[in-house]
Every structure is written in C-alpha cells, then in structure tokens.
Image (cartoon, rainbow, N blue to C red):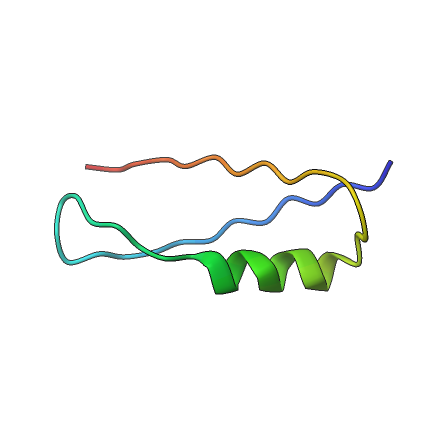
Length: 47
C-alpha cells in the first residue's frame, strides 16, 4: 500500500477564518501518483 505524508501551513489574519485549500489538496494528490483510494486530512489549530 502506498502512502504519503505532507504538511501544509496556512497563515490567517483572523483568529478564526475559513480557507479554501481545495487546489492545494488536489496538487498533493496529483503529485503523489496515487490513482485510487482515500485521503485523510487532519488539522491542527494554534492559537
């Protein structure tokens, strides 16, 4: 089974803010070369 770990960092202006990361996630999946399966994304909030 193929797997990949990638860390993405986003800086926001507000304490709570929605950020559309769709294109960055698509890029990571495309770069991985994985053609089928699932993707899991975890978030970590730093106050």
